[in-house]
Image (cartoon, one colour):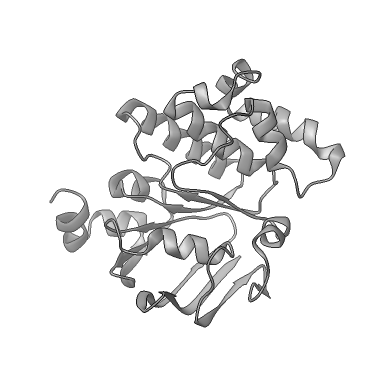
Length: 233
């Protein structure tokens, strides 16, 4: 579904992503793990068209994304839930969801909202509430629901557990597993390596802009070097 081949990404003179290649197959959960500053978010932003690789290629559903504007990438079926949620704080929950459907036909908006409410009953309870007054966990649910309104074939999640209490982290990962079981393909960037690898079919370990290890989620959970670096030994 997604094929990233030997991309190099720069911030000015800084070589942030160095020859990274990976793929996501239909129906998988694939995770990118690594320390802060390893380049995980930069990779997602490059795939979604917010940044552009200096060299290398990115293909989605067999077609190159080179030069494709970010909003057209969304229309092709690739949606990102950004780090820090980035919801529209002054709008209601339902208005946020409607904004997520900007690439979709009007006839799909109401059914899409109902599907989101089935996945996130809490959002239905809060549908008329101003989004900025929601709890952190509810805001994360809203950011995920807004992305689902684009009816994505691939959902990219950037640090969905960031800043959440442990009980809410568990809830978010339960939702990720439910979405996966319902057939959504997911690319997950996450600092909580234990949780990410426990739900992932496959994972890639990123250090200073390079992939240094790959394997199934279980293989990486059992990898001694990964354990020492990311799983508390």
